[in-house]
Image 1: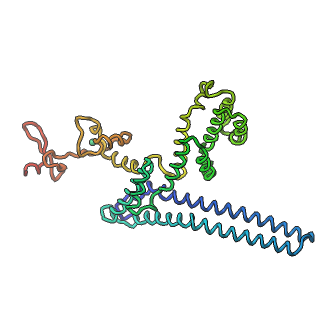
Image 2: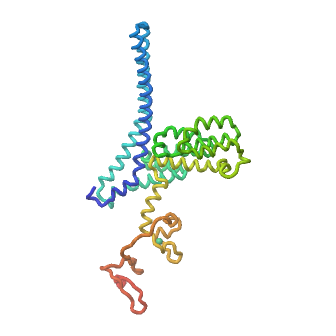
Length: 370
Ligand SMILES: [Zn+2]
């Protein structure tokens, strides 16, 4: 790696979510298996203890004991089948995606030059991946699917993840928290670890909706069941929301009116998207933009934003790329590069600049020969 001219660390910075998403998926499969095993093993343990107790007390017939043991065997067989199904349907496919992605990343480590055809091929695949990522983030799932299929990179992109995102966001747009809450419960531990308040926000919204339709009995029950457990961290919000029991959407004012505002649903969509990006270590902006920022920062000059000095060959001077480059810093040139207006070549020690005595205009030495 040290012998090649590529910035491997810089390249790998962009690849974290690429490896992380299948890892997270596998972790979920593993957790489900573990839960199944724990549940069945504890049931077996209970039956076994019970049998032993009865045997010691001299209770129960051998037939009953046999029946109980048979029941235990059956349970174990069902568990075995369940685990095998889970592994075949979700575990193995996820593992093969992980393997393919890691192989894709390790290929680049064996490439020695950034100028060769091997790297160009690898970078083409990477660009395709980023185009799919861009399309998925902008709701162009059909485009994403067709690029992935055409380029044969289905295992290298996260179409399923974004289908999930779209399904849950659509539900939120229809003002239903059910899907998002199910996602929260699947990812409970991870959300708690990063102290993400999405679940509380969703619960609060369901409470607000019950108050809106003046179903007060149910609202009070909901508050006890789902909001009180957040008391330690969200007591102010819980107390404020409780006042909605007294205010209808028509009589509410100030903060209570804001709680009834249906724009809260839009911010729930945003919070959900941030939470799911966060858990998958996906950046909030398309990877394509992030990589372009790097390139644009090396080209951006104050002149790019001056109508008089726009250059047709400069991407930053272009309005659309210029908009993307707005936030990036200007490029830093230690030495100016002077380009000859006549030959289009850089002027340096081999092709030095020469000035006309009459008007002071500077052209390169090579320009004399044309
Ligand atoms: Zn420019």
